[in-house]
Amino acid sequence: GRVGMNSGAQRRTDGRTTVLWLARGLGPGGMERLLVTHARLGDAERFRYLAAYLTERPRSLRGELEAAAVTVVPLGEQPFGAARRLRSLLVREEVDIVHAHSPMPAAIGRVAARTVRPRPKVVYTEHNSWACYGPPTRVANAITYPLDDVHLAVSADAAGSAPSLLARPRAQVLVHGLPEPLREVPAAQSRAELRKQLGVADETVMVLCVANHRVEKDYDNLMDAMVLLMAEEGSEIDGPISVTVVAAGAGPLLDGARRRARAMGLEGRLQLLGHRDDVGSLMGAADAFVLASRFEGLPVALMEATTAGLPVVATEVGGIPEALAGGAGELLVPPQNPDALAAALARLGDPQLRRRLSEASRVAAMQFDASHAVAAQESIYAELVS
Image 1 (spheres, rainbow, N blue to C red):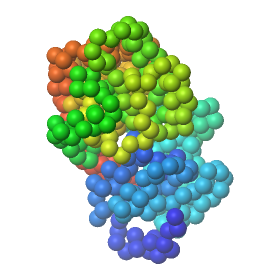
Image 2 (image 1 turned 120 degrees about the vertical axis):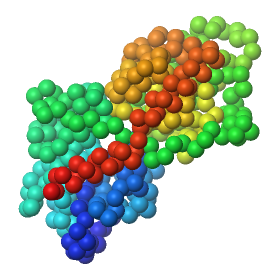
Image 3 (image 1 turned 180 degrees about the horizontal axis):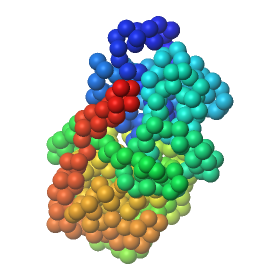
């Protein structure tokens, strides 16, 4: 995690702008994957990227960032120690721009930047709704929020979630995207083999959920909906199970979710796989996609699902309704409403509906252009240092 002492001098001679990304952690979440995408697509002749983080997390994307020539620095979880190390990093590396991607690191970064001369510019991207943050995080974010030079948000909903007193000027919405379309749907044999490994019959509608096990993803809502769906079908099912959900994602609530699923008798109807490295293949094997979230920004998994042409069942939260405006949003339901979610999942048994929604998803996916998003972000950086 140490940064070479001569790297600041190198930046001075090559004329590049040094940008430091600040994150809570570098686990395999949507925001962290967006950083990897930016690192791979960014203009290395104009910008030099560093990344600093507070919390060590399993399956860190640190290696992928470093492979993309990003210097990665752990700051530690203790706020005052992290602030001291961050200030030292800003001075040593002569950072021009601090770009925070999480509210607590943003609060630390804003204060640290004010102690350095010349002062780095500060950019903050809102990746989620303020409603999902705990009180200490909301307070720290609110107190330091006016210190930003630029506010960005991944969706209009995320931009509007800031308290009204802080939302002037309103955050600029910058929709992110995928670095390249997901690989083509696997060949029929590969699709069949993966479904066989998962124990999903050809006739069953396999619905994929990609979400880490955190409170805002509301797996309880999904489990409650599956119980209602089973009750609606009756205990005696003639032929294969009609709809099954396969969920990929790790996180602190995974073990508890597995215990609850077993207690609810969801074996065979809901598979909680934990972390998977083959999400693209899982999407190729799936017939539809579901998110039962309580809060969202604009989920990267949703971008992937639409790019793969999957019909989407999701809650009307965050940037999801914006992303699925038009025909792709036909199966959106209110959050924390398992009855509505169960009814939407049941409708996936209609193959004509799935075909129509698949086409609508591919149309919706056209808005997720990573190259455009990276260019727009780097244009903001360039304007700040000019």
